[in-house]
Image (cartoon, rainbow, N blue to C red; front, side, top):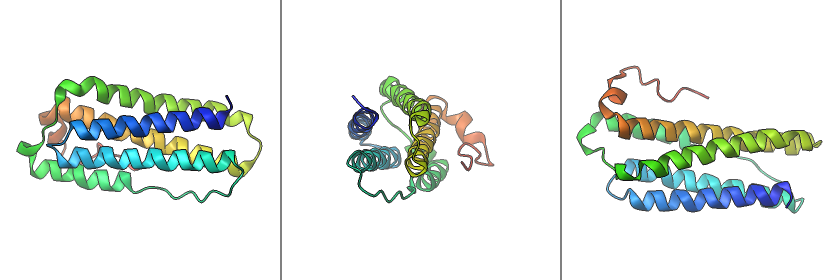
Length: 162
């Protein structure tokens, strides 16, 4: 399999995984929305790699999932008592975090195999979005595992600008 087939497989697996996670978190609209946005990002990445494989032009648009997540996390502060999700599924969130980190590492390792600066730039952008996804998941995990500690931070530095 070539890079693009593997990358499309990674992104499809990620999309499916986030859709399932969002469905399991139906009682928490904020986290469900973040997971749905992450699924959309994975679909976008899949389409980018499909176009690159077919030698079609790619128009890479950064997503707003990070900014939207900041707003959602900020709302958690105001409505702390409504923050709930099936914490028995914590292993799934941790698996999603692991998948995002593996995706990032894979894409960064494979950059050396490319010579086209445009392709390299796109792969780097996708990798950076995967890194941001990992940061979001890390925050979700922290919020669900230790909500009181997470909410103590009045400066809201959990999601640093990336």
